[in-house]
Length: 608
Image (tube, rainbow, N blue to C red; front, side):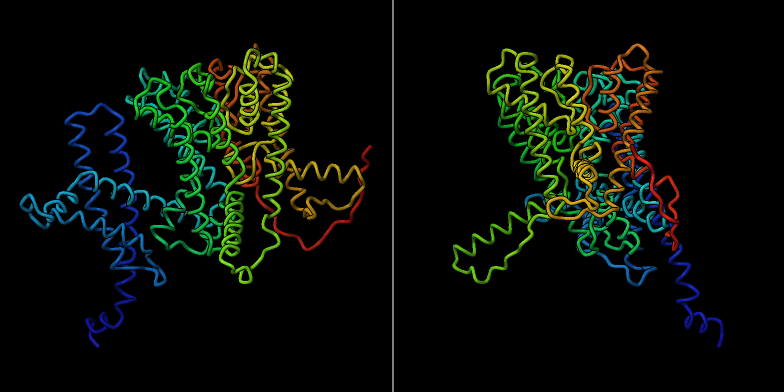
């Protein structure tokens, strides 16, 4: 057997490994091209548009287009993994990329027929730009998700993703076209962190500092931060690639709180679908209320509605109205606006698993009534437990806290901040200012005008926060409920902790107590350091600011713009820790011990 016959016989072992290696290297090179393309887009829209800018962007776009075509072709011809599959949307995206070759292969047809319009459509720069943008996001998402396959610590990956978005966002906010008169790097970092961590604290006045481009960047950062970086990247990776490893899927399932690999993609679709649907409805309702009342054009009204809908549902608390939600133009005859914003905040704060559970329950009753009307009740399968335990806890606690907060604020501010308002306005603004501390930093009245009792109540509400797996912050309603139930159980001498006819596991009790204790330690250390950095500020104001930052609320007693650079950095760290999760971040940094097969002798500690 000569060398050529040996090569033909063993080509899979001799040739294919090298081909697979080259394809893998080219895919990494394509990721760099994707970054270059995104940078070109930023350069195009971030700086003053000139012919030189257009020429540079066009050259980069053409080069990236060629690289993506080669990479896509190699990916379909050679696959290093025999189990690798391509989803339907992968084929759609790839075919969309190949269709950009039509204007290259065929000459322009004569105007007036269908072939001409098809040729013009695929020759359009916007079409090519959208395809390349989707391809870039898909490649970078796949690269990001593949990091999980290297057994990297998922909490650290989550924290790193937020850091990357924050740094990129701060760079975008410093672009010349993002602001009217420029912005310092510390303020850009602060605003980017506040938007990505859906907090709402601002060190500069947003409407007078940022242009429309800058406000769009802030809205995108809020949306990314509210959904979660891993949610978006996981969606792109699984929806357009569909070839993530088993370990990747397990890690992603843990991050989005789903126990079934079969429901992982559907969970991601639910999250994105619920978000876009609720924000779209909220945008429409806000536009209906403000239309023709603020002296804005139609497009300005739409943008303002979209911005506030995204900001409210993501519990960010950013506003592009001068003076925020206390603007005189919306303070009168705009109660529906405050009610819509409150509902968006509540929906965003109860969490996506709860929204899915509520949706399933509503569809269950819809099917039940349809079976009654169609006389097919005997075929209907009844369910006993429609709501799971987490849904019951979150809904009961949310309703109770909203009602209690509204009543107390109404009592404390009746003749104070709400003095002179009609009865209906007082109730609406009491409800709105009871909703916002959990955890959106909107405010319809100046917080410095509120009574001390109201401020203390708001601090408690900020610490409690919203539901788990939501856009809200704080220690979370679920954690607070478990801590309180366990407290009453210990006081009554009950050995086990029960809530709503369910026993809480000891692990949940321990984790809840640990999360709350860790929150108190972090906020105390932050307040202590802030008293050294900002010695001329009262402790009450510092406590309010630190709790607001760590709980990602965004409410402030007018301290944020007056902070020193050191104070802003401390608040930046608090916002980051609050969004990623103190318990998640610390547990990811501390090495986890392996389960031991032995126990030490037990003993009792003297208490009281």
